[in-house]
Image (cartoon, rainbow, N blue to C red; front, top):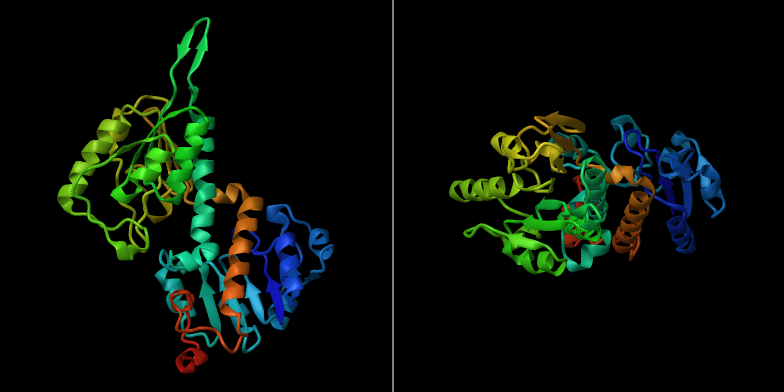
Amino acid sequence: MNIGILTSQSTPLVPIVPSIAIKYIKDGYDVAIESGAGMGSYFSDDDFRSVGVKVEKRATVLSQSDIILVDENISDDEIQSMSEEAILIGKFNVLSHPELAERLKPFNFRIFSLDLVPRSSIAQSMDVLSSLASLAGYKAVVAAAERFPGYFPMMTTAAGTVPPAKVLVLGAGVAGLQAIATAKRLGASVEAFDVRSAVKEEVESLGAKFIEVEGSVEDKGAGGYAVTQTAEYVQKQKELIHERAHKADVVISTANIPGKKAPVLIEGITVEAMKPGSVIIDMASATGGNCEFTQDNKEIEHKGVKIIGNSRLFHQLPKEASRLYSTNLYNFIKFILKEGPNSIPYQHEIVQKTLLTDYKLAETAS
């Protein structure tokens, strides 16, 4: 079978790196990549050629590949130019863009979106959202440290002692936990809030203080994600966050509910109560933001408080993000094609969750 990789039109990521291309080739696949596809992640065409990958034009990759790997975007015309039995795999972010899911659904191709991989034990090695969230959590703290006009660790000098920066992390999922770990490594004093009491032990194991509001709604069927809370709980939550945020130097906000608008955790009055020079990194900006003043993909300042809205901080680490993404893709392909392209396990949760189209074979497979 032929695997083809296309250049992303909107991101620096590439769905394959040379070290993973070697694995595909050892598994018996022929691999071709569009010329220049790896440049945004610092992989040259020669890097791919050196491991046995063919470098081709985009149209050639589209027409001659049995499996096509993309990052996020591909046009309808390009899908139509694929071979009849081709498999298309990417991360199309359909929960945030349901109109895209509707657009892709009628195509008579097998189209899979890895951002829909369930958070289960068997799917961990395919979980691209967790892979990229970990990088984003790290980068959020680094970005905050660069913008904070103070010093993260405690430092004792002849002129006196510099206290550690106070960091508040909102949301202790994958990104939040990595943010906690990074802030602690830099020497900050860290507090973390999450509606899920189950993460308390993880937060404390990283050396942070866990703060919580009693009475949260938890759903074991949510795959580890937060769920919508009651109005009474939300009010208590905002009061707690206000109390903690106005004392913090840095707030890292990661709270997302899949398929819904991000909850506003940091109100305008809270921002205005924060110290001048404080920094907010809002990683939920793509779905509305956790801060009332957040603007997606923008850095603004409100009364001395810097607010950075960026849900894709992992794009600032493209080489590592591409390596992790390509590993997730490899593990996914190895799973769904274990018995061959005509024996995809359509009844398995991983396939059912990620398959976007009403492909004809899906109806007959059992």
